[in-house]
Length: 228
Ligand SMILES: *[C@@H]1O[C@H](CO)[C@@H](O)[C@H](O)[C@H]1NC(C)=O
Ligand SMILES: *[C@@H]1O[C@H](CO)[C@@H](O)[C@H](O)[C@H]1NC(C)=O
Ligand SMILES: *[C@@H]1O[C@H](CO)[C@@H](O)[C@H](O)[C@H]1NC(C)=O
Ligand SMILES: *[C@@H]1O[C@H](CO)[C@@H](O)[C@H](O)[C@H]1NC(C)=O
Image (tube, rainbow, N blue to C red; front, side, top):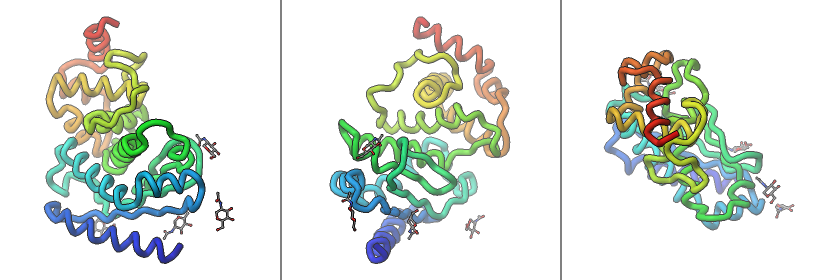
């Protein structure tokens, strides 16, 4: 186990070096502690460590582009992201710079596993990089931004709601992602601007500042556009 982890770290360093265009390299590490469980075995066989490191890196670059964070001073100061493949419950979660993916979920997944895994990584990696208004941003909006990135990366699963569906703008996940996509259509780069504003705080007035309407009005317009 120790040897295996050591070689993963070496792989990590060479990848960081390849992305020299961004002055501050981010180190990516996989902690593959799910051992020989069926999900762990499937991860290793169908996805693999090298692919995962590449996906983490490309997700990061994609997210910086979406958030218009060309300059490191606009980004979170994150120097290392660790992704754990472990046997647990649910799909995945992120705490600070640690992404935890459930090996059992991967093991039981029916469908295009690579594509689903990439979507999960783009969503979770967004949590690593997005601003949360110093804890004031509503959870539904945080999840909506993460799924907006997943939508833009073209990694959405088939069970998502369609545009215009859902009950509340801050319902989270796919519902909020579709709504944010609508808002982004009204003003290109809206999600990037909103994220920038959430660096230090959150206020529903950000929607008014950026789009000239309250978020409730925008939600009504959005529902009306799709005949709901
Ligand atoms: C990998 O994760 C496991 C379980 O969380 C932990 O016990 C172990 O110390 C980690 N290994 C490294 C090298 O961080
Ligand atoms: C995994 O390996 C351990 C020994 O290293 C063994 O005891 C265990 O049964 C194995 N589990 C599976 C699911 O193969
Ligand atoms: C970023 O964080 C690293 C370690 O966590 C620290 O060494 C570095 O000085 C920080 N950089 C900035 C610009 O704050
Ligand atoms: C997936 O399979 C494992 C056993 O292989 C099981 O323990 C787990 O509950 C199943 N479901 C999920 C969602 O992980």
